[in-house]
Length: 277
Ligand code: DGL
Image 1: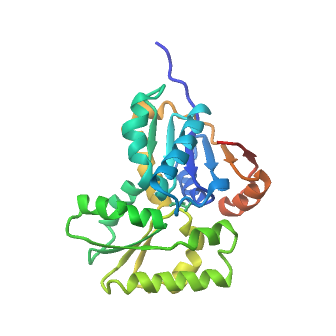
Image 2: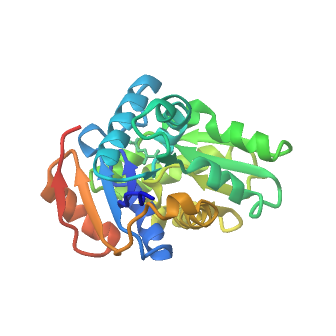
């Protein structure tokens, strides 16, 4: 019998945000090999149309497949909101290897909030694209029809992170302004989802301005445990993920600039390679 080819688990984001997911995934599942791809040259995705986000995401996924990945995590809410369903339902079934899989970050996050909220009033921060797609509203309504969901787009947060301004005073201004705007929608919000993988990189400022009674939901650990559970339930995929504990980084922007910044986020030396999609 032919043994299935193994390869790293692919992790994709428009830029640096996916590193916040990768860090927790590697902590929970250190045994696997990983291949991270950041499309920094074309970030941010959050203000782009459905069609463009879908096309860019599909290119990235196909690139990761071509590098031997059988399983790809879209560590990006915008791509999960705008491209995941089409890739899963339309592209994968007719691809060269329909047994490959692509997973997103929205469903596992929504599954988690039920255990957190007491009031059932949920706030969601996201990119303009994620909020306009109403993906969180739709997924939460399927699982918890009685919950109230309030979304708020934070168009400045990703550029602050991508431009290394997350520690600056400008970040304080925008984080406070957006928190106030979200909470002004509904005084009963007790749980806020950080529905963009870049946002944990602003977590110190978010904690500074979020009232203490509100629980902040970050996705890294949730996605990591959901992936562990997925691999347990799908041994046919698990055996296609190579084990060696390695992690390689690819970027569509300048590799040394990416490596410098990524090293701060993942707290280890990152040597990145430039690719073109
Ligand atoms: N990190 C991505 C997300 O989770 C989006 C960043 C962007 O706008 O490119 O939505």
